[in-house]
Length: 223
Image (tube, rainbow, N blue to C red; front, side, top):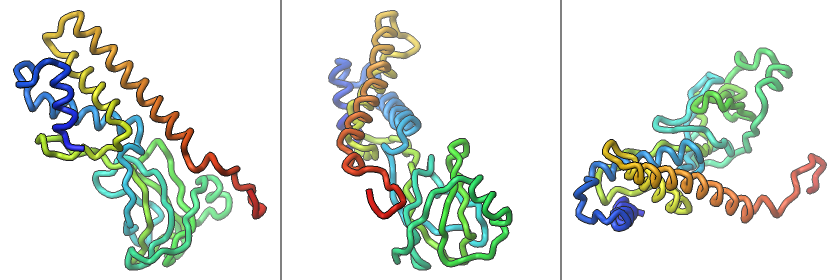
């Protein structure tokens, strides 16, 4: 989806097709704000999966520049970043500390076994054992959307959230310095609908998730 797709729709409903009251720059600001607010609330809306090289000989790691939040580490990807290896398990830091208080000082290995993550520090995570000089993992993380600067710029957000983006832009458009009381009321209504749409998308994603077809793994070789 291009920026023009959603901006033209907004302008049509605002009866401002020629950009008299709301300029192109206004629209770019509003769409950028909508994308970033959406990713703040729903990191998976801008999820990317990449093979990422880890920092050598350190348990402390960071997601790539421009990343917003770690979502998952799936598996090892070898020394070339293209060779699938063993899965990487999420674990609690307290469990690692209890099992081995010196795990931060262990010698480097060519594959990692576990990672631990704290939501309070969303761009940082820890791995064990420390990686050697060339260790890649397949990482899923949320990437902060770039600023929209032209009508042809892509809106790199899951298409399921298009309606929510539209409503957030309408909220921003009606919430301006010269807005009337009626416009402020419309702004609040569109913001409320934005949050409502997020909830409806979440319900649909959960209802039709493949994970609903399976019972949690019981650790005994069966479902």
